Length: 244
Image 1 (cartoon, helix red, strand yellow):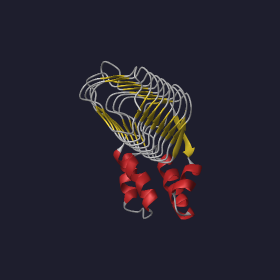
Image 2: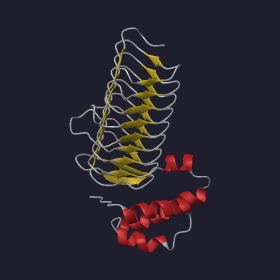
Image 3: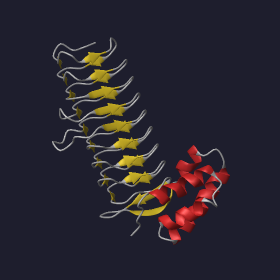
Image 4: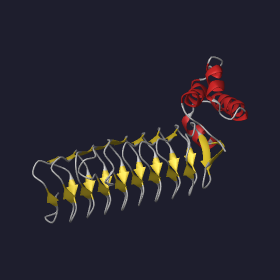
């Protein structure tokens, strides 16, 4: 169903069962797959693809005419969120499946968000920042340019992230966030056994004592057998983790 007040440019590719609400604006390079829902006043400008069952709420804005945006299936983007709308945004933005993006979030050029992430109200993901799978970011937090957040990490509200955050860590603080510990709830939900939680705790404590040194992490890799602990150590070995 397409509301008669919606403005759809010639060339836009829209599946038969897409719902488009009043006063939406859709440019010629937009692709809307099966089951997409656009609430009123959504603006899609540029090379934008929304995969199956994506739901955009009222006043969402995506694209500036030059930025490519890919949003995979089952994502929800709530009211007044902006994705790739800044004039300086030029590189592709990619949201993987099952993400929940809440109101007034701003996502900038080159950002990649892994599947099943939850980005709460008024969060800023600055240029080229990355979130791996199942990351949770609290309201009004911000990720600086080129920062990476590891799988299953949780970022507290009103936190300013200026460094990479390892998987399954808890980080919070302003003006510079600090790693407070491990996201035990996230590990229980994602790991198949308690042994993995124990192993991640061990490598976390060892690396924390060394200031999350990448050199220490490289040495620890050969000693680590549990795959979740390996993932944790490997992240630190290949990223810049600072904990003031």
